[in-house]
Amino acid sequence: MYPMFRDLVKVSGCGGNGRKNIKYNFKDAVALSRNYDSLHYPNNGTPQGFIFHESRCGSTLAANAFAVVEGTRVFSESAPPRGALNTNDPNAMKDVLYMMSRFAPTYFKFQSVVSFSVQEITAVYPEVPWIFVYRDPVHVMVSQFTGTANHAGKDPRMTPNCARSKGHPYPGVKEMLKLKMGASNTKNVDNENYCAAHLASLCNEAIEGITNSVGMGLPVGYEGLVDKLKDDLMENHFNLKLSKKDKERLVEISGSYSKARMPPDKKIWKSDSERKDADASKKVVEG
Image (cartoon, rainbow, N blue to C red; front, side):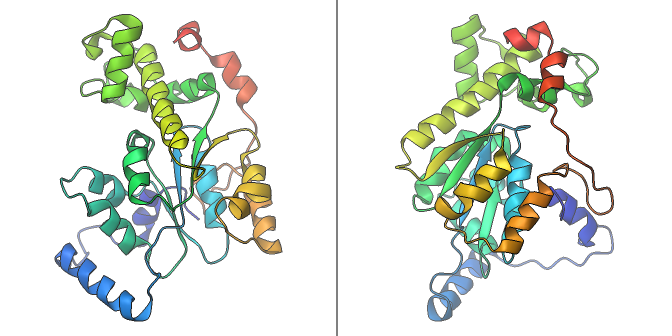
């Protein structure tokens, strides 16, 4: 099991100079597939669940939980759905997810920034259950800044992910910074304050989506995440029946580091909440 779709692509042998590309019109492929399914598999191609999140909050663990259930298919931050959002085709998202969801119960964990489009996606799929995974904001911020040389560094390799959109901020982020700091130019905002606004805006979008979802969207906190999925949400919210072996595998992954590139480097998970509290700088706490 690999934590991210890019890890699977990397080890699949699909890339490199030796690969053979086959080009085919995507719309034609969708039309042919839909026609075939209408005759033979009328319920084919519908996603079974979505995972939205604010990043660094346990969402990969949630995706792994679905992936260890026998018979499921999980796409963890794959490129096509996000790419579909960036087109001018209103049907692009539905076509892409349809093609990716055929012939197996399929679940999607999106990139964190896709949470800005939570209402757009769930409007297309009002019947699909989903969750938004969140965590103590200080812990998320500490994770974002771990490994950066300094919090305000100019080197993009040393810039936390949450600050990489400073040059082209999402509207909600820009509005929040203007309201909170009177900042009209986000490039001049330090990374801590920008990230705080970015993460808060993601959560605000999720809250609004949950409010409008008529029970199909639920907030899920990081603490005890696997137990919440195993003992309640997978069966009662996502209607995914778990066998005894499925539950045993869920218990097993709860003790492993979710982003370990397995195999072979399986890592043991240890709670890091207290360490993150200790590591949080004053600027992060006050951001």
